[in-house]
Image (cartoon, rainbow, N blue to C red; front, top):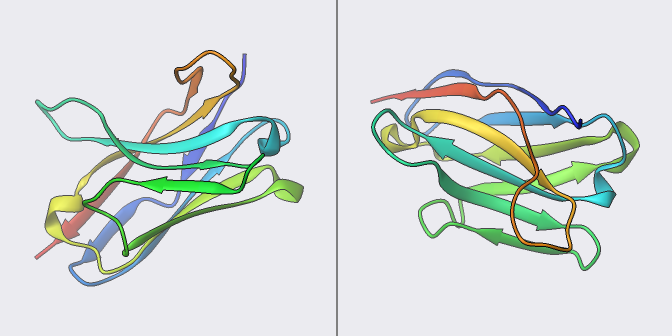
Length: 118
């Protein structure tokens, strides 16, 4: 069982930045890594993903240009750099990993709270 551990959440003012980290037990280059978020009463939504094998990244329209997904294979860690944060970015953020080739996310972290005050 792959365990993902997110860190880096917290409280920040609107316009500020946070960087979330997702530690994996092995080389993250084996997986597609993704970030999702969820607020109470709403479904979990996609934020960003990175496919290491082809170097592709993907972002939700709501975060495009403000968030950046990256990773460090030597540290087995994926990151989500969040800039120009808005109150509507407030959510629990989850890291996920997909081992492929079947679609779907196989592993999830426990989540980290991000709160953006206005």
